[in-house]
Length: 513
Ligand code: MV4
Image (tube, rainbow, N blue to C red):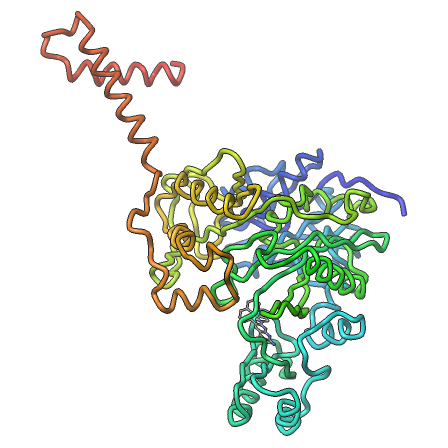
C-alpha cells in the first residue's frame, strides 16, 4: 500500500475536539474546514479553521448529524478527508461507509470494524472466540424468562441483565435474588425495545464495585495493532466521566501487559485500524473483563498523550494516510502521571443543573505541566443545545501526588465568570482522602455526592483574585507616588482628577495611541 498525504480535512464536529483536530492539522500543514450550526457561528472551531461553512440550525439532527450533507460539502470544497471527533457521527458505520463511497478518507475505523463492535452480544461472542476475557455470562440472547431463571441459578446472584443492542447503561438491570428476576427481565426488555428497537437481552455475572480501566489502542492499515496503555476512568457520575488519569494507580506493569494484550487481541479480531479504546471492568481481585470497544478518539485521550509522548491525532492522520506504525510504537510504557478534569457548564452543587450563558471573564491556568484543551474563549456564549463540556484541564507531573498538587495549583489559578462550572467539585475531590489515595470504584462519586460527603470549598475563588488585587494595588501605589511627586499638581486641589487622567494617559500609551 502506498501512502497518500492528506491535504485538506473537514472536521465534522464542534467545541474542544474540533479545535484539537484543527491544531493537529495546522501542525501538519493540512488545510482545515469547519462546519458550524447557527449558534456556533462564532464558535472557536469555526474561527480557527481555514474555512468554515454553516451546516444548519441548532439541533444536532439538523446540523452536525447530517452525514450526507457533510460528505457532500467535503467533496464540494475539495477536502480529501473527514475527522469525526467524538460523539455525533464518529461511531456511525454508515458515515464511515459514506465517506469511503465518496472517495473521502474517514479518519477512523472501517464501517466493518464499527459494526462488529456495535452490538453487545455480537462483540461478546467475537471476543470469547478470540480469547479475550469477557464478564462471565451468556453467549446468546435469552429466549424467555424461564431460561433467564435457569441461567441465573447456574451463575449465582447478583446478576446483570443487559440489552443485546445496548451500551452506556441503557436497558441494564442489576438483580440480587431470584424473586426479583421476573420484573427486572420484563423492565429491561421493554426499555431495550424502546431505546434500541431490539428487545433482546442477555445475562452477566454482576461485578461488585469494580474500577473502569480502559486501554488505548492504535491500528495501522497494515494489520498492526498496538496498546498505548491504560486510563483509569472510575470517577464518573451517572455514566459521565469527570476525572481520568494515566496510568491507573492500581495497574502494575504485569497487569498492564496482560490488559494490553487482551485489547490488542480484541481490536485485531475485528481488523481494527486507527484509534480505539477497549473498556474493561477491573475487580478487587485484579481480574479484568472486556466490556465494549469505543471505535473513536475519546475525550480523555490527552492523559495518554502526556504519559506516552505520542500525539494521538497526528497518529490518526498518519495511519489514515497509510503510514505504518513505526518502531516508536514498540512496547510503549507510561512515564510520569497525567490527570484530566472535564470542565462542564453545570452547577455541581445544584444537582448538576445546566448553566448556559456568556463567559464574562476567562483566565486559563498555565505554567509547567499544564494543558488546556478548550472550545471556548472570553465572550463565548454557552448554549444548551450541545454537550455541556467546555474544556479539559490536563496536568502532567513525575508522579501521581505531584500531578494532583499541580492540578490543585492550576485550578486555583483558573477563573471562569458568567456561568457555573464543575471546578468546585474538583477542588472538593482533591480534598477527599479516597481520591487522593487512588482508592476508587465506579460507584464512588455517586455515593459521595448522595451522602453529601463532597462539599463545595467555602473559599471557591482560591487564588483567582490574587494577581488582580496585586495589579490594582500596584496601580494605585504608583498613581499616588506620581501625583504626590508632581509639583504641578501639588496643593492645586486637583489631585483626584490628575490621578484619573494620569491613569487614562498611561492606558492610552499602552494601546499605542
Ligand atoms: C456492568 C457492571 C457490573 N457488572 N456489568 C455500565 C455501562 C455499560 N457500558 C456497562 N456498565 C456496567 N456493566 C456487569 N456485569 C457495571 C457497569 C457500570 C459501569 C461500567 C463502566 C463505567 C461506569 C459504570 C457505572 C455504572 C455501572
